[in-house]
Amino acid sequence: MFWGGTSAVLIGTFWFGVGLYTLFDKKKWFSAYKIQPNRYAADKQVKKAARLILKHQIFLLLPLLLLSYPLFAKLGMNFSWSEMPELWVIALQVLVFMLIEDFLFYWAHRIFHRPALYKKIHKIHHEFVTPTAIAALYAHPLEFILANSLPVMAGPFLLCALGMPVHIGTLWLWLFVRVLETLDGHSGYDFRFWFPHKLVYGAGARPHDAHHSKFNGNFASFFHHWDRLHSSTLEVKARASRPQPGKPTSAPDKELEALAPSMKRS
Image (cartoon, rainbow, N blue to C red; front, top):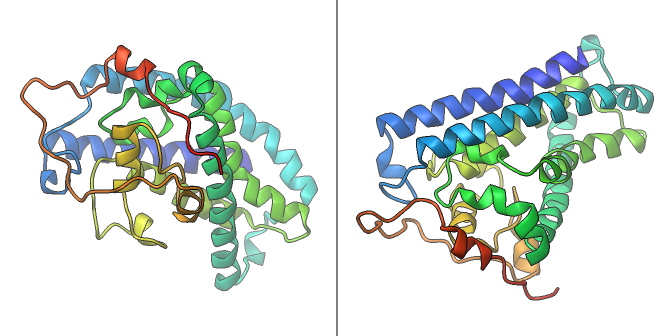
């Protein structure tokens, strides 16, 4: 149940969301909400990302979930559907997971922007200058594990280790919310009515869209307090200027090599 259900939530939610946002891009139904007007990721780039993500999900994610089950079971995760926690407990635990993930992701993400690590690892993710949903998991294998996977599972592991059992249903809800958030953050759309980015600050996809277009700053996932505390907040505009005719949607290699200037030390 753990392996199959958790895999279904993570993989199924991701690809369903990618399909939906791709349909939005193709049909241009919500072009008025585009943060970078009239700019869309190239089909070749999207197909390249899809191939890499499928490899990561099959050869990295599924084995990691298989290995994590005995650890969760040993730490006391609740697998009984007749013993569901109260709603306030579920909500509180999901909030704790968000805070832990946001902290770990902020620092993992920021470290991957160090020039040496950026060039060798994180540069892959930044091939998408114009974000689209599938870019959410397009990453080097090390980044997929250290930034995209471990911070997400850290909260549930920590609470279980501290003797506060997490129900399998709470874990699945948390993973569902996290996938929705990263899809929204990379979607390229500022859907002000869309709930994932209204959970706390309501900033939506704009902060991470700015991160992809400027290649630095706005490192956090859910919240803004770490960026504000460590002076890594980027100015966010509601709408980017329209591109000039013929302007590419991906940064040229020469530009990418010069990215990731060192952020001011905290």
